[in-house]
Image (cartoon, rainbow, N blue to C red):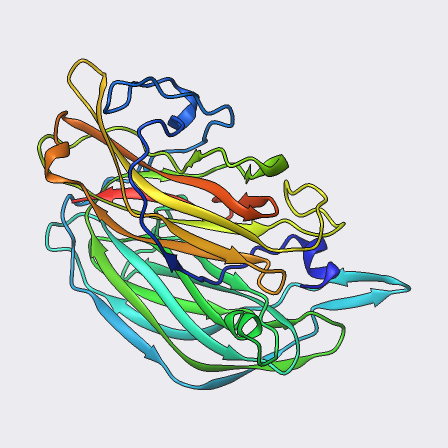
Length: 376
């Protein structure tokens, strides 16, 4: 990762998932910094960092609105314009134009309501020189364009960004596998979905990028509540292993229905002299964080009666990747956890080794980078 890349603050995502399981921690920090009583009766310590989340406001169908579909992407070569121009000794970033990779149709809703899909992309690319690119997608109405606000919307959303580099090492190859995912809302009458990419070099000369293979998919999902991280959070400051709750969803009146939690975080390894986002100046090196989903049940009196945790997953981010997207496996609510009529979810994150790590926020410009949600 070049100093120029860090200076532009580009957000990138490539996933390296390392599976591991840990026992639920009843004393984990509380979302939003509010004291709570754990499932074992012990009082948990409040999280000073807190969490900033906002609920989805769109009216959606309470059940999946259509069938899953997958579109395969063939090999394709794209022209990559230079990413920078120089004026004297100063380099200036040049935004890259987007090019469509594919378009496809989303089915209409049988219930006459907007319905939610997980829009996911997987790309393997090849580059002769260091690149930067973003991948975005959206689904528009077939007849009438609608534009709900991000991130649970028909407007365009950033699925992933990355800085792929040439080379044969594991770390170099890993930069060229790009995974991205977002929640999108499809209008009642269906829609046309588009996937675009914007490659550029990390220098003052142009080049090209090869899309070796890829796929984009739509998977229907019945979302009941969603937590969106709206501020950047540093984990592992000064060697801390404190657990932090991010992407905390609002409470949802789910009754006795068992729910499933989903979520993902975008993380950035803090290293070097140049500051990125909220990162402090640190030594050159890698960072490892662990994350897991949580589901909390609240009884009729408003007291927390059960908290359950999904298996933990760790991600190691090296200076080659700099950024990583960690997608957590769906976590079904345990059968014995239905002690209250309301539920919410969040993602618990903590540093396990190396430098500080920044958990990226979901910006208003259409970047669903760190979010968690419950579905039926």
